[in-house]
Image (cartoon, rainbow, N blue to C red):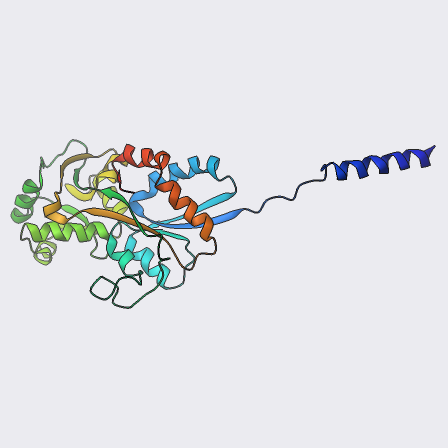
Length: 274
């Protein structure tokens, strides 16, 4: 009797195997490493949650920092599949299609050609703490206060895109940054989030940040820089040649150019360009 039962069980198992009842091999997970400007922290974190439904087998790992710091990490060999910079300058420095005059004096070759796009546009905003204690209502007010030594401004370091845009605004108004720094009317941040925090905590009278960071931090924007003042604030994105997950990186970049991600970007003040 026991022998008969064993034979029946063996036959059932054989039939199950032929019918496809064998346990399926677990699909491999892909870890996609994305280096992105600090000003994209909130939006990409939100987009990552939505992307789980699109690509459940892809795990997004973000490294948020100033674009200059991220560029340096990439050149030093850090693992990165996709790079999104807050300005063309840092991307140009990694792009072999650019020569020295185009911003790549070292001839670096990290960008996977054919993948680079201008993904987003942002705005350079003058933001103030809650209640606007210093009564600053425009860039003209900022300039007057800096010259009079009556206000304290937070800005990004010179190697940070938001700091570089601020320097262009200074040049537009013919302000001398070194003199202002020596006069003690400027403080610095190593990325836009540090500048934003100084404004949020009312450690300064105002700060020059991105409109999207002001939105995320619930700060009041009293003025926005024009194109004449600092140029366009373009965020380029590209898959890197060093990626080990080219297909997944391209797929995520395509998603970032799409309508679902675009709605998230627009909700905080970005303008999708792709």
